[in-house]
Length: 457
Image 1: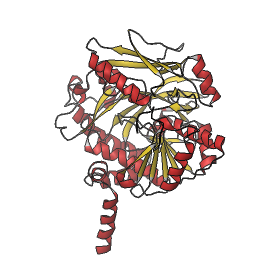
Image 2: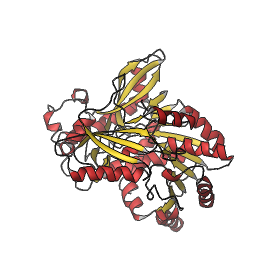
Image 3: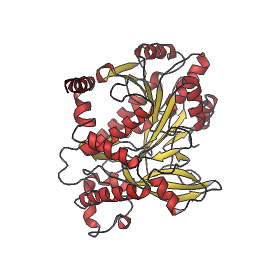
Image 4: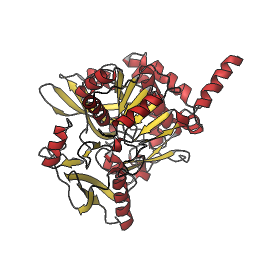
């Protein structure tokens, strides 16, 4: 008994207070993990039964919101209206349930440039951590003990400051957060020295930055070894997966989710994505089809966030399912028993850095926290000229303008100019879509020369 208590005490010391009280809160973590573990061993019928029992609590909480009161009482979820990002953005308070004082507030720019204010219950925060920890275990590392190097969209310092260090430490030294804005051929040796010194178990990346890192390693004929790669927040293209596996010599887990926390999927091999049962109630609505299969929009309802119970939230993300699946086969996919081929996302949402040797990812951070901004479109005219096209409400103020430009400058080096244009419409593609990022032909060529995909022209 004493040895067991000592082991628990040792693990708690490795976590900081916020990690223990918030993300791995003992009131929720153990039971949530056990429920998800049990569902992974369960047949479809049990997964459906458990999910709908949990869904009843979610709908009860949703009926206590201003939005939910408009839905006739006792209606099953199929009779609830589909919820768009714009509806949530325009009046987020209408989706907050009573008694949610202890929830965590968050904001997201969204992959489409539409800023959304969110509220997450303690149980929802823990459920997300349980899923992430499962991905870490799939890489054969202990999520509490793991040393994690982060190469995502974190702003470490002014992107115009080219002097080292290009990183900072967190979680008592167990996490090394690297500045993606500073990674290029000239700074690569410094990055590699710090990574070697840190001895990372896992590299947590945006897929676009994983590709940049691998191509820089190839050009420099350098090597880097980590136990595993945890990719998320963008589409991980199969060719990048193969490149990273060959160069880094490690296992890779790719995860799909959203800030709204209404669906979670993962893959350990390209084209083998599974939704994680017990995280959300997922509906797959067919939107398009081609000769290979169908494209379904992911519509999700969180099973854990009773503070802001989003019902039938339209993510705008499409998954590709091969063939012509039956309704039963789609149900097996939605409940995590059958894989789907791929996630059709927005991996092109990057900017070319002014030096034309690196990219700037994480652009969805730019609209975050900007009031009265309806939607943002970023146009890169050249490596040193960026135009922000903003659809705004009449209440958009000087303070809102300054916040938007401040956010942009945190991501974009001073060598590039930033122009803000208030517009009454945004550019659309021939297919009717509104891209978040648009690259001029000059930028497209430079991105292609660097081996990266370019956005819409």
